[in-house]
Length: 221
Image (cartoon, rainbow, N blue to C red; front, side, top):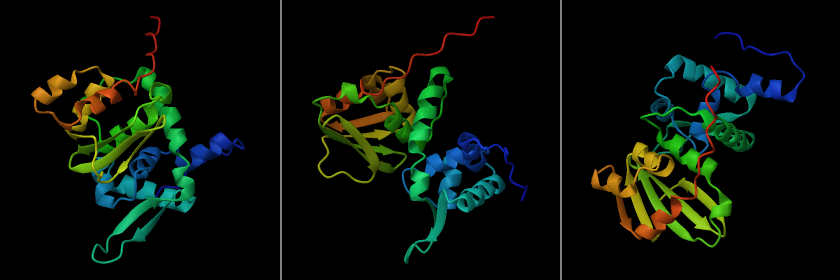
């Protein structure tokens, strides 16, 4: 394994980059922010990271105390990687970085499930949610998530909802286009990219709650 590179700088930000600044490291953290995963699940979420590089990042993050590896009890009996309490504290770092970088984000055709869900947690604007109450079941790539609006707060976690107001299922790219690129939800449904059942109004109320930041003006030539 290649020796770990350090900045040898007493600044806490430099030390933070020593811990999570290597390529793929923060994306590994993103993939684990919604719960533990097996190595194969991480490979699915980060398809462009080679197995060797991914293994190296996992070892480094484990050595740093950002995540740990544990074995699930039978009948699963498989090993999973999970963030430590300290690792979960990186969520606001990811959110701040995401909001900052979104101002120059290029258009993309693909978005991963965890990336989409984390983007919703990042872009939620609580000032727009006053008085709104709703529970929506999302299913992206057969992965269920429960989204809840309550008292101006928004949560979205893995799991099955009990009696949701509405259910949205389909391709994560389709929901991202509706949420962030003003693609009409009716068109996504008509095209078969999304399925909406239950209270469609509850879903429509969500659409104004995740504004993208103003894009940077193009650099002067």
